[in-house]
Length: 80
Image (cartoon, rainbow, N blue to C red):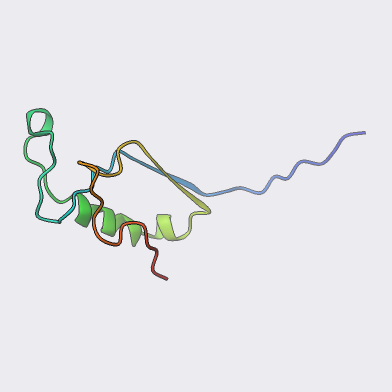
């Protein structure tokens, strides 16, 4: 007897190595690698508003979420 397999598709979004900083004006701590980058927090907020994120069934975040271990305020809260 063959069992039927659920063939429902899932939308999965994968974000990695965000390196968010405590404040929007802070620079990343890897200046020798990429130079004094800023704007990770703003870019992340823009990504969160994108249709791809809002239509996703699952959002996976891997790697370094924060740059120095200090999350930006409200990072782990979701607003509807």
